[in-house]
Image 1 (tube, rainbow over the protein chains, first blue to last red):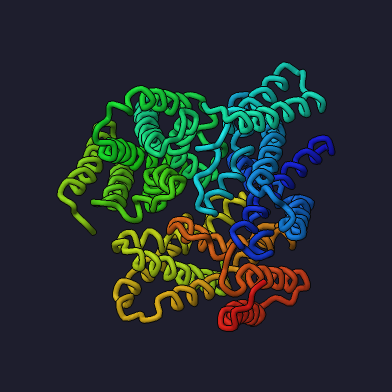
Image 2 (image 1 turned 45 degrees about the vertical axis):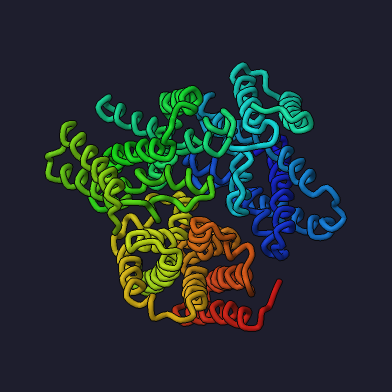
Length: 198
Length: 198
Length: 198
């Protein structure tokens, strides 16, 4: 995996892991529970994707470097959670950032495994929302992807669809990926700010 | 896959997707949430089966036609949900129809992948109840298969077992499959009507 | 699989299945729900491990003998649940015994499939805690591994890590495995007794 693929994926893991560790703190889990939930949220979407792709052991288990972001996230959250004032907003923001990155990287991984463009976009969507579903089910919330404030599944599917389309048209590069992720993140945050509903 | 296998499987997906979309409406999810939950419920049991069968990418991702029933279900539910009077009964009925079909088709798929008759029946049971478990966990209910009104797991296992037995004895054909599914559906509905408990 | 590997694994399935069936009784599930939940809890961690290992059909489906412990557990619980006085303590004790055994056997299976020592230990942890997570999610509880009374994830990871280390150093044998499982079980129970928190 080239570093241009690996770095955005690890960043996505980190953002989702922060959202999981934050929720753990909010629910009064201890530091171990925070690390465990952050790890599940950060790696869950990608593991789900890799299991469905049936392409061998999920990369999170092959490459121990995937364990680094959840550990960093748990430590950061442990030391900074008490200074966070607008707890829910911070969680939602990190979740949106992870979702935006994974909608791109999840689709790219699926295309690289030979999926057709439609299936790759759907697997990108699953990567983007899977970790958050695990987080919310564990915490006994209805997962955001099913009942979000603002738009959630639409930006995620848009990001996955654009990535798939751009790759199919041979337009995809690092800049395009960054632009798509920024669009997804922006759309999610703006829809929250102005309370758009589908 | 012959159309005699594909059509009942797609019908099962449709019935379960309706149950998921109905529950989404009942819980005040928007149309996107309704489509997402319907898709998860309709395809979840089969994806779970295919992942356990370890026979490559689940057929729902290989064949885009599997996405059609959840889309139709979400649209139908969107336009007709407000005229439904006995909401819970309709949900339970569609769930029973999906469960009855999947107990047959899930077992057939597993036999076709070379599983022994016992394992195939258990995978048929998993196909038949998997989508509903996902639906109920997401909605924070205890899954019906664990605590149903009436009988649930018993008809599902009966259908899967009869399908496995009939295939092993080389008696299975389209008529036998339809009869088994009708028996499973009937047993489920009668047990609800007369409040049978295991 | 040698009987020295199979027997501890089946014992772990039995212990976890008892914990699932006990919770089912406590939640007023019927005997079928009790058998279903016990089976999911007993086999869930190992199926999750085998799916991630991508090494073919999970052994619970290949070897019908894995269905015996959950059936025995459901029968035992059915006849003895009403004499149990300290319900929650019994459930926690069986859960701890299953977790201790699976932290060893789950790691061994993963090493045998060629995983590196770190990934094998993490898969041992997943095997040890996966069934309990399924049980608690189904019952709408926050899974113990995330918010346990006493220590939970730490003993499980310690057991998996020691097993991985001992195998790597070529020190592992049946006695070492028994000693590690006893240590994990003891640490879990002592941490509960004295209310240790991470």
